[in-house]
Image 1 (cartoon, rainbow, N blue to C red):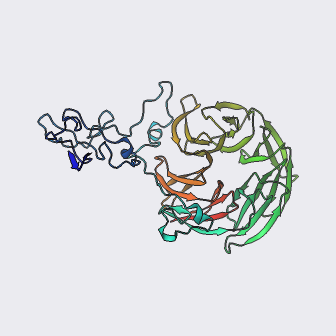
Image 2: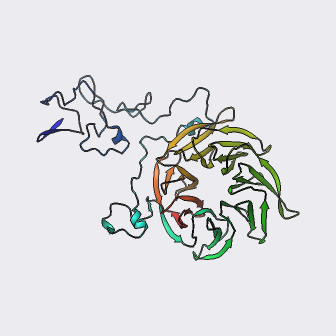
Image 3: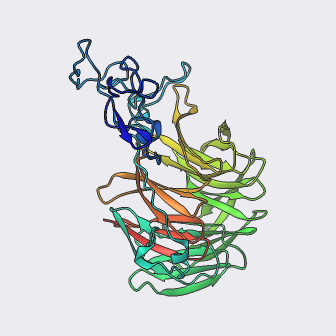
Length: 434
């Protein structure tokens, strides 16, 4: 109905327009179904008043009575006659390896809820004068299933890498300040600083080994034997490291991927192969299903067979640098500065094709998979607006946000629900799922 409010008329959002309205030019006819606000459905409408409905319209029978709701779904529509989040029609030349799982990506019976909170930049700098009256968040996160335990201060520049060796009580962080710092997990104190002589590009742990990527070399430490090795061969910064098929792979600034194999007899890593194909720097690597996946600045993901070390497929759907790749279940997930997260699934032929694309408002820098306190899978997506967004998988419903002074480029999972983030300001934070 129309509500008379002085000199203007306001459309009632909660029901159909009345046929007794005195202004047929303003009130829609009963024969014309009222429109539901698209932005309201997505939780984003900020108009008041809004000319469209902020409620779903019940179906009407021919006699004018409200139709009873059906609990079934037919032809992809719910009982109100509106399209539900069913799977869209696929390319006839594409078939998923697991159609039931692939159809769940980004889909549910309700639109994903987004947490709209923003953190106060003045509070981050310790200068907010509004205190409790400030309309922005005065905490480093929003979400009710995790919390920040502590912040470890020590690095003078941005943190690019974090490693937590399995079974260890030490946490390692690598920074652009050219140091690797060692932290005692019991006391939270820095117990060691190693000067690397160059920016730390990446760092991983595998068994007793800790591998650090730096300009023109890879450093290897054995935490059990205290062995200290330098692996030569890289030309430029080492951006990514991963272990697979008993080999260490490194993504290099010169667009190559180098591989080493450990020789127990000589207690050293020997060059095994050089993988060429990318045209620009290789910045991300992951191993899964006997494949090596590499993301690069040339906007592509290459798929390598770990037995033959040959490239078997090139994925070129991204429009900007592919910043991070990871494997989850039977899927490959990639993110890019083109503001998308893409989920890839294998076809009957074995090739990968995009089965779902998640869009962000900002470029993506890093991905990290983890489990919450109830062992539900979570995807952490770090964006270049200094926010990490946490999503349920496979629905991509938002679970929370983590704020930082500068971009978060390093996320590492620890035991017992712990995870760690390192940002461009040198802040290392410890988090825990409840």
